[in-house]
Length: 83
View 1 (tube, one colour):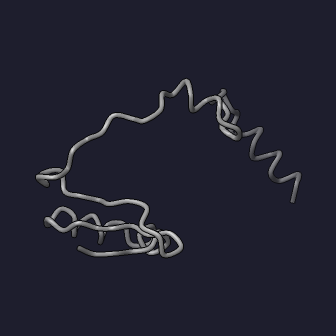
View 2: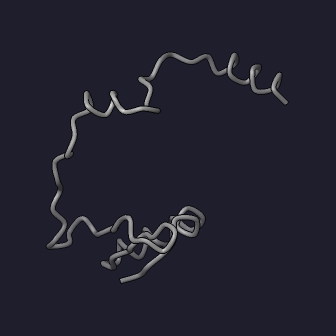
C-alpha cells in the first residue's frame, strides 16, 4: 500500500495510476487524513457502492449550482476585465 497526499497525486497522477495497474493500492490523504483509496479494478475487495444521496438531494446543497450553458468567450472577457 502506498500513501500519497492530494497535491503529489495530482502532480504525478500517471505514476500512481501505473502503481495501481500493477496491483498496488494507493491511499490518498488530505491534511494527514485518509480520504480515498484507489484500487485496481480486479482487486477482490473492490466493490462498487451505490451513491448515498441522489443527485436531486445534492442539488439542494448550498454552493452547488446546476449547470447552465456558459459562453467561454464571455467568461474570458469578464475575467480579463477583473484583472
